[in-house]
Structures are given as structure tokens and as C-alpha cells.
Image 1 (cartoon, rainbow, N blue to C red):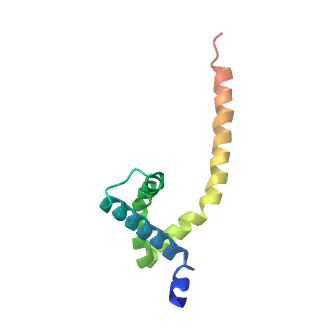
Image 2: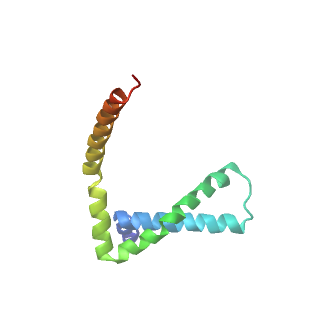
Image 3: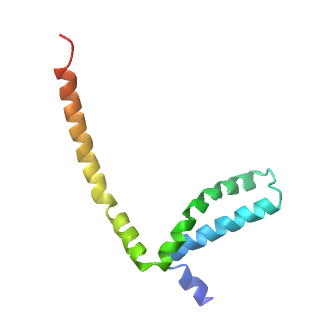
Length: 103
């Protein structure tokens, strides 16, 4: 019981567990013939989580884990940079519209 709880405390293990659970749900729904119940159709959308299956390799490779953690931590700084870029595009777009308008 204690091992089960410590497994779910690591975020990488949570991601791994969600991918495995989504795969099990998909296998069970395929074996039952894919009944058209609303609950089962909602669970079929969990197939999208199967795209996260390659992320399971990150847990085993420490260098990949460092790279992914660094990318996730850089998102706030990148969002500020994107806002500044959008303001520059807006500024130069307004300038171009006023400069190239028909005479």
C-alpha cells in the first residue's frame, strides 16, 4: 500500500500511470465491441493520451528528463517574449498600413 502511494507522488509516474490506464481503457473498449454508451464514448476520447506513450521513455533517460524539465520551465519566459514580438508586429503592421495606403 505504501509503495502504491509513493508511486503516485512523482509527477513522471503519474504521467506514466495515466498513459497505461488510457491504454487499458482502450483495450477493454475494443474487447467489449465498442458499445455506444455515452460513458464509453467519453472514454474513447482518452485515446488521445496514447500519443503521450513515448513520454514514458523520458522517465528512464535522465538526460531527456533534464531537457523536458528545462523546456517546461522556460515557457513563462517564452510567453513574455511572444507578447513583445506581437507588439512589434502590431506596431510595424500599423506603420505599413498607414505608409502604403493609396494616395
